[in-house]
Amino acid sequence: VFHGLAAWSQMNTTRVVLLACGSFNPITNMHLRMFELARDHLEDTGQYRVVKGIISPVGDGYNKKGLIEASHRLEMARLATETSDWITVDSWESLQPEWVETCKVVRHHYNELLTSEQSKDDVDTVKFAKKRRVEENSFEGSSHHRKRGDPQLMLLCGADVLESFGVPNLWKPEDIAEIVGDYGVVCITRSGSDSLKFVHQSDALWKHRKNIHLVTEWVTNEISATHVRRALRRGRSVRYLLPDSVLYYIQQHELYSSESEQKNAGVILAPLQRYTS
Ligand SMILES: Nc1ncnc2c1ncn2[C@@H]1O[C@H](COP(=O)(O)OP(=O)(O)OP(=O)(O)O)[C@@H](O)[C@H]1O
Ligand SMILES: NC(=O)c1ccc[n+]([C@@H]2O[C@H](COP(=O)(O)O)[C@@H](O)[C@H]2O)c1
Ligand SMILES: [Zn+2]
Image 1 (tube, helix red, strand yellow):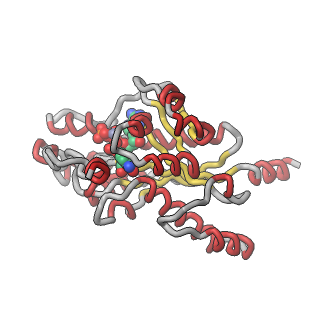
Image 2: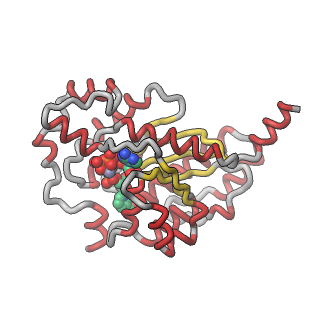
């Protein structure tokens, strides 16, 4: 009976893959905590089973101030996730020659997910997955159309990213609608931000509030990559803010100096550049 119950509840939960997009310049313990917090939260609802986490470092074309080469940021993320049995790192986004809109990154990974399902599952799945296999640029498979048993991909972010949806010329409204409407967002609330209020005040987000999972981090943690870079420039210890393996890598390659912080100084951030011209 118990075996049956377990199988039944497995069948009735949606498998979820969490995708985190960001600079990861460098990756910190808080980035890793985000995944753990999100998984607990989603699985607590009894509706979801989180099967995988993907870290997707942004490409160099993002032009953010102080952003060091993607190859280093990727390697640090790989080192940081070595001990996790479910969080992975993906290089696709960072290898694109130009900055890629987050919505396109989400589509790419959802297609990858469907393709892997297709190859591992039975004929039935092949048939359906094929029918719904979507072009990277014209995804219309809203969550209402997702077939029972299909996995879901959700964007994982912090409150600052969710609230950046409101910054003029940073996000296309149709991208926000697609990410929130068709996929879903898990947002870790950083202290000092009021995501609930933000969702309430935005018609676009309120409409899809059921797809926005707000996770409160009660043990508030202000670790940020900016803080880590600043401490490193000043020769201060950053130990225990990020994994030792990442710290050794930073020291070995002498990453993060006053010089590297000047990268892209005075350059306009790629999305702002794209949407204002
Ligand atoms: N302390 C934190 N609490 C909640 N979310 C966080 C925290 N730090 C980072 N995040 C989230 O992690 C993702 C990646 O962020 P990002 O690479 O910008 O890291 P960061 O630490 O905010 O770096 P920076 O200080 O350079 O902006 C984003 O979704 C961001 O909101
Ligand atoms: N319009 C968009 O798709 C858009 C705009 C701004 C930032 N982003 C993404 O959000 C993340 C933000 O990272 P940072 O907080 O490090 O700037 C990056 O992955 C970036 O690509 C996407
Ligand atoms: Zn940030």
